[in-house]
Structures are given as structure tokens and as C-alpha cells.
Length: 331
Image (cartoon, rainbow, N blue to C red):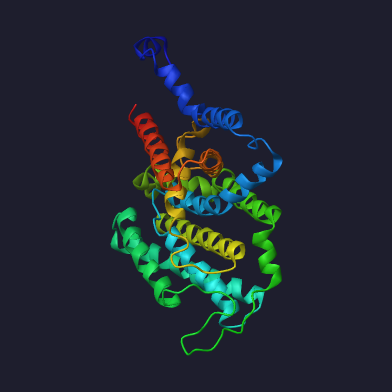
């Protein structure tokens, strides 16, 4: 910045830039200090594992959402896709008696088809991503409800004909969700793979170029439609992984089980924009955003804050993150 430009800059701009860059991390440190002082067991190693375990599914889903944001999209159907994955993977075991690998593979393939539907509608009809995926969110939610007939899928459940389901959920599948180590490792691998892809491959850089200026990307010879298709496939894939992990954790498929993860995923992704001054959707920032939400929820639960007040706090955090992000873009 030139001397003249620096002289014309508002006095508070330096402070704002510092808070924009490090505000999320400082907030996490502040929350840790507050909750650590106000509660007895917040600093325990077991509680740290609990926090990481609690954010694993939302982080995986939010990472997929982050990839769609990188190309200027906004996949609001990730929660419904996770619901479909949750219902499919459990039903493959309980209703159809499939083996572990087959059940997971079929679930992933079906959810990739969901991504194809999203990409086809967005790219070919040129409707704003957020509006189109809002519509498909309800469609896929309805698909999940229709498939499960609005019932919870579990071992030994009563089928519509009155018989009991005979399929068994594999013990190896249960270990994935019930072992804190595995679910945390899978989360970290997803974040790392997305971070390396977006920041250290030409394909990731092309996605950021498309998200920054679609017309300029087209003029540069980038296959915009192909990369937007790829982004929605990745988004659906990670949402499917999140739904599968949810099934491994609870060992059932609840009605619209993935729906509640949408708001947290959106919040984590948008909070991540400002982490270390990135100014764009990024996997590392999304992970930090999820950590912030996880610490906030964990601390509030320890302080016996009523569960029905949680959304007020999470919504306020999201509103603040959006305000900072868009204010920074305008200035």
C-alpha cells in the first residue's frame, strides 16, 4: 500500500484486518478460557476427544459444502444427501443383508447420482445454485422419507408385512462410528485431502478462479461446466461419507437424520472464510469454524444452557461471520 493510500485508510482498518484474520482463533481461545474457568472438566483429555468426535460429521459435510462454494456455488442439499446416505447404508445391511463393502459402495454411488442431478439442473438451467439446491434439498429429503416410509431403520425392526428384519449390521461398521479414534482420523483425512486439492493442485486453483470470476475463467479456457460438475460430485460424496459415519455412530437411520447438520455446516464454512485472512472458502478454515461451533456447544452444555437456546447462539455466530465476511469484501 502506498503512503498516500495508507494515509487515507480509516484508523480502525488495521484493527479490523487483524480481527478479520485472527478473530476466529482468538474467539476459540477466549471460549476455552471462559468454559475452562466456569466448568470443572472442560480441560480434560476426554472432553477434547468428545469435542473432536462431536464435530466430525458436520466437518465432513461442511468440507463438501466448501468445495461447492469454491466454484461460486452453494449446495444446500448436503443435509438431505446425508439423510439419504444414512438411510441407504443401514437399509443395505438390515433389509438386504449386504456385506460392508457392498453396502457402502452402493450408498456412495447413489449419492454421487444425487450430485449429478444437482449439477445437471444448476449448469443446464442456469438457475442460481442456492435456489436450485434449495428445491432439490426438499426433493431428496422426500426421497429419503419415502424410502424409509417415515420409519426408523434398525436391526430386528418390524417390516410392513409384519415380519422382523433379518439383516445384521456388521461389527466392523459399528467400530468405525463407536471408536473415537477412527471417526476423528476420517474427519482429518477428509479435511486434509480437500485442503491439498483446493490449494496445491491446478484443478483446485481453477475452481477458485471460477468462483472468483466465471467469465474470466471461461475466457482463460477453463472448462467451467466440468469443474462445477466436479464440485457438486465432491460435495455429494462428502455428504454421503458424513451420512455413513452418522449411521455407524448411532447404528440406526432416523427420519431426516442429516437435516440438522446443514445449519452447522453452513456456519462452519462461512466462518472459515476469515480464518487467517483467507477471504475464500477453504477446508482448513471450515475445520476451524467447526471447532468453534463444537467448543461453543460443548461449553454451553456443560454450563447447563437449555438445548432449545443453542440455535440462537449458533445463528448469532453465523450472522456475525457473514457480516464480517461481506463487510471485508465491500471494503
